[in-house]
Amino acid sequence: MVLVTGGTGLVGSHLLFKLVEQGIKVRAIHRAESDLSRVERIFSYYTGQSSELFEKIEWVTADINNIPDLEKAFEGVTHVYHCAALISFDPKDYGLLHKVNVEGTANIVNLCIANTIEKLCYVSSIAAIGKSIGVKEATEENDWQQSNSSAYSITKTAAELEVWRGSQENVPVVIINPGIIIGPGFWETGSGQLFKRASRAPKYFPPGGSGFVTVSDVVSIITSLMKSDIQNERFIVISKNLTYREILEKLTMAMKKVPPKKQIPGWVLEVLWRLDWFWSLITNSKRQLTSASVFSLKNRTLYSNAKVIESLDYEFEPLDNAISFSTDIFMEENPAL
Image 1 (cartoon, rainbow, N blue to C red):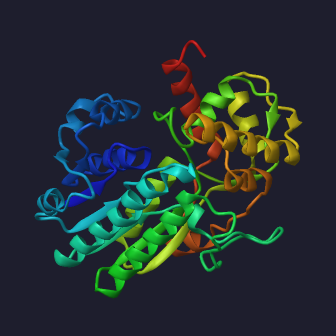
Image 2: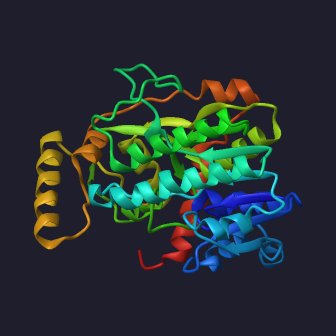
């Protein structure tokens, strides 16, 4: 039996599809308020038998901070994919981020130890990879620094330490650090917001850049790592390093929109995050920009995918194919945009 946490998210839902399609017995954790219909809709993007495959999942209502519920979910489990995480870049959410990302991961690790789990895969983020210097690509060995790091980055790094603790307690682990993940169905959160931004044909683009990868590649790599003899290793998972201008150009052109032409000056971003901080202070609203997020928008970080390619003899799918596939679904589901 395979256990998946975060099964109602972008990676988790696509992972569930791959597992049940292969006939693997799978159990998935979801919170009481989560929308399971979205997972079935994700399945429908790839098959005409979405309902039949969806019904093969054994769903368990549990919170990763509720130990009794988690103990029931772990019964008979041999392998665990820990995909659950809270994504927020608002410093005011640090307490909740720590609760979910760090304490929740510690709970999963403790139950993996207690149940002698054969292998644990943790889906982390490139936010937990140390920045590169100049044009040098960052690798898995880069030292992570807290300066200019978001609250999300800090908690994902701390969560990885919990996973490494599990490896010291005889639980074989693999960690992946995916870049910005391109895939369909989650337009309101994370990388899905890029599609909404592109649909508005923005005139401006930020000066920085990052690593990008398709959700299909992420799922293929984590399932391959779990089947392999590889253990106690972490892997950067990106297909391409792109500037934000390049990714917005690809998205807007796929939607037949005019791509952005003007770069946002760095000083404008610096002013905007301060104004956003002040507005958040007086209205108690969520932060849209922070000093850490502006640092990322202004600076391009390059990442190396050499380790995962060499370890799995892996070939990434063309990013443009996933962009075309995802934008077609986005426009179909959002005809007014």
